[in-house]
Length: 265
Image (cartoon, rainbow, N blue to C red; front, top):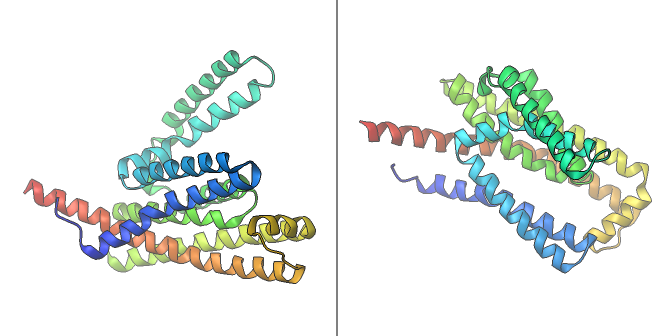
């Protein structure tokens, strides 16, 4: 394989630091504020490893396709079956129910998912799926929308592979990247507004939580200014994250395809 250009290599290194760094830092702070320093180190290290695994998934197209397309339904049914059944039966039987859910999920994949080409799915379906994941991430990170920025990297990676399967003209590729970036920003705007209204509905408790996390003392006015300004900034940032990731990863896929072709010839 031909060596990567220096500017592309720098861009890829920058992208490769995002998941490990953000997940390790968030894990550390969650452990530190919720438990103790030991747990903080454990969660920080776990976040680092998880980020590295996500990088491996994102930088290999086939693996990215399998993880993003074929695992959600089986894993969701596995976990749901386990959680629900564990309230009624012992752990062993709950595990058997979970395996049953996994089998059903694999069957649903075969019937409903695999027949459709992942990178040719209708955009309105993708839009709904992205909203679902956005709400899930917001809930997982306790209503803090800044972590939804991570979805911009996944969306950008998906867009970079999708355009290779559907578009050849550079103008159309750029147009799709911009539309995708605008959509991820719009969804984050809605998520941010939801988080903003939730915080304002119990503003005193929200301020207290912010003071504990940030280690500062915020007045009500400063708190409102902080979450409003921060919300606007992350929405704008989401556009550039999605667009930048899509363009950079497309360069990588083209490089790999070109190198493979040159080796064969």
